[in-house]
Image (cartoon, rainbow, N blue to C red; front, side, top):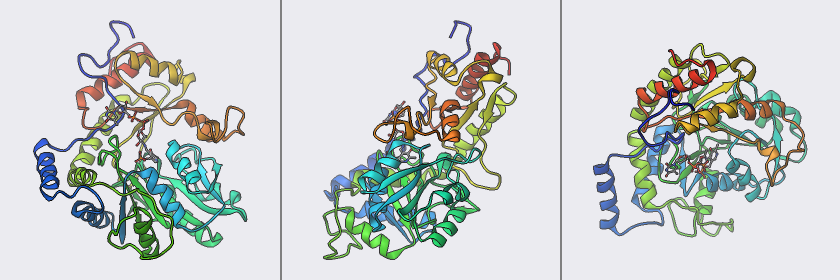
Length: 384
Ligand code: T4K
């Protein structure tokens, strides 16, 4: 970046993570309650309140909170009680596929749809075989992973269906809130997610039996809804009261954050319109999104520079945009390496997509500066 290059100046670097923090007073009050009760873990009142609030918010019978989404995915898959292979995208965060392995199942990578970036029923069906235990779809960017069609497919072929909904709280698919699709869905409350529990996650399900198994497997303690003497494998994957306090505060402020994100998203969309080679990732018409992720695809031939060259230019101006996801997991140890069979759509997306900063730390001015820096890198001019 040269001296006359527009970019973010005079502040902290702009990260892609959301880092949505509750108001200090509310935070102090919630934590004072924990200290007064001297109840820090083992399914305390805040964890129970969170499970209820999440289930109500997502319109689902059960929400079972956990220490993080990775453990929640592991337990959701294990609680299906199936063995064999899990059909999963390679275009996802490593936790999705590591959870499959930790659950004692074998991941089989499927390519994703070029428009939605998620698994589709048509793409997955040819990969279903006698060893298939389940399909694990990922609602990447909060865009629904064709859930109704995958539900029909899973029912017809007799396989399990779980969704990694780490990105998707507050989003809809086919007009229905994500949370009640398939056998189970899994949300993340990591600090960089729109609902920040300073780590945390949950499984949601409409299946009473699955919920009871999850409530048993998530800890060694007598939490609510636990099955006595079930013989199920158990783990310390329970959520602490501190996490639950943070997540409850986040849930209370979620709608305001989504609205704030939506305004940032519109600003990005307006200011990136017409930049050669930059394709802005829109959300499906008629669906609700949390607008947590601002994603662009860069066509190097039209833009005159590669995605990685653009990232480097932005980085030198304090704009920490990121490749997301890179490389595809079919090319990442322990799942594969550079010689892995191509997944053409995944390979293309991994080479051309990037995530731009958003969230509480950004305002319209910062968004405009990021867009001007992109425009300048591509066209040599920052004019809007
Ligand atoms: N499935 C999907 C599709 C996921 O995306 C994820 C997690 C999971 C499953 C598993 O969920 P969890 O088990 O984590 O609940 C981060 C997060 O660790 C991870 O939760 C998230 N997805 C993933 C996409 O991003 P990193 O290691 O690449 O990002 P990190 O921690 O370097 O943070 C991003 C930026 O935010 C950095 O530039 C620094 C900044 N940051 C981060 C934290 C945590 C801060 O400034 N302060 C902070 O406290 O994985």
